[in-house]
Image (tube, rainbow, N blue to C red; front, side, top):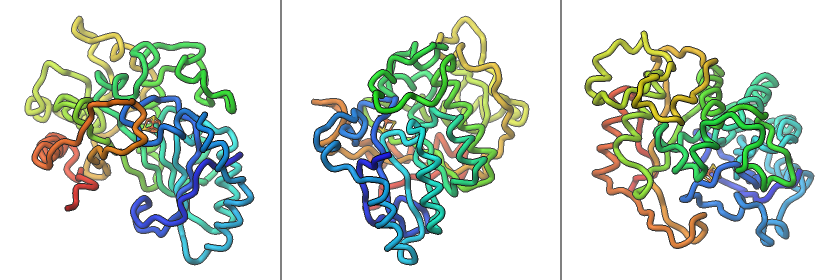
Length: 313
Ligand code: SF4
């Protein structure tokens, strides 16, 4: 495997760790606000010319052992690389703790990494509320919710086959990843990058209910939802006439989650503009601090320890 980028030190990306970040290219999403367009498209000449070999990166980590104690595996979407377990095995042999950044679309890889005790921390993106997920991830509603033999969004992955498996929708995989992570027993976080032009209050009302294990009921206000017995709620979709196709296609094999929202770590992080945003000539911007605090207050109704990240002056 080659590594497309190496950040030699971060104090911010791996909680309570001095860490390096490895960036792996390719992604099965096309979030229009993505900062890493070269990595996502996987075709940039700069990326191809500047990659690191696995041995080079491991040599660097060997020299820094004792000074650094963590390695973040980021991307792109790292779980699309079938050699990821082998890479992390070599990193852990050097004594490092490993954090994985993921969009949650490859629960089988997550399961394998956890079963092999290769992860110490997982950070998973929750792109948006379920109705808005396709737009936030830059894929079609069909790709999000329908069972397909091959996902059109994966066709660019000429260097690796997608490991997520056929016949399983993105939303189903994301749900499975949430379940796996919450039951993993390791430290984890869910997080949403909040973008003016993509998100509205409805996203945060749904995310808060979703992560707390609530049925999707958009006809109810957040206040109404809060009054209901959360422990009785499972991920059974409301199969009503109002339910749109993407939500109706939620998987049938979802596991029940208890409403352990007190333990759930969830962060809202503000969009930052830069030169490498995936969508050219975008109209995205950051919400004001006041708006972010309003979204946070919605989330906190069901996830009390949710917090803002990256809003420091
Ligand atoms: S922000 Fe979206 S497109 Fe960019 S790497 Fe993450 S999942 Fe892929």
